[in-house]
Image (cartoon, rainbow, N blue to C red; front, side):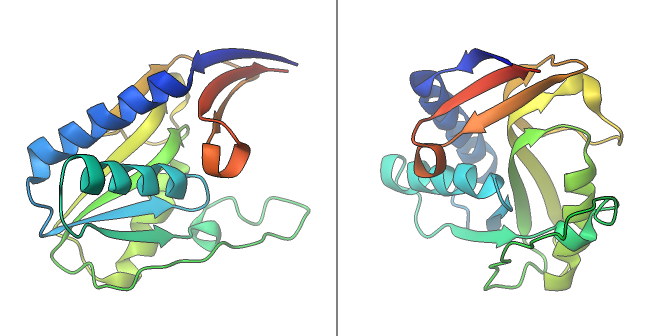
Length: 179
C-alpha cells in the first residue's frame, strides 16, 4: 500500500478559509442558513468551518447539526457485519431554511442521496447546497455535484482518498492511497 500526500496541513487550512469566504459571499449573515455535517467524517469539516466563520470572520451564531445517514443508504444491507449508526444531532427545524450539507469526500453520491432523504424528517428546507473538501469527479453513480469544493481529485480504480483530521487522526492531511 502506498500513500501520496494530496494536501498537507497548511493547504487544508488555506482551503478551509477559501470555503468559508465562499460561504460568506453567498449567505452573508447566516440568519437563515444551517450547516449540517454528514456523519461520521463530515462533522470534522463542519465543525472547522463553523469555527473559522465565527472566530476569524466574526459570523455570529451559526447553527450546526450532525446527520446520520446509515439506515437511509441504499447499500446498508449489503454487508456481513452489523452496522453501527452514528448520532444525529439536529436541535432545530430546517423548515424554509437554507441547508448546507458538509462532507469530507464526494465519491459516488450515494451518501448525499441518503442525506437528502434523511433531512426531510426535520422539515422541508428552502434550499440545499453541498460543500465537500474533496470531489472525486470520475466516480459518480448519481447526478450529484458540489456547490463548494476544496479540491478536485481524479482517483481511479483501486485508489482511495483518505482525509485525516487533527481532532480524530492527529493531523490535518489528505492522502491518495493505492492498494
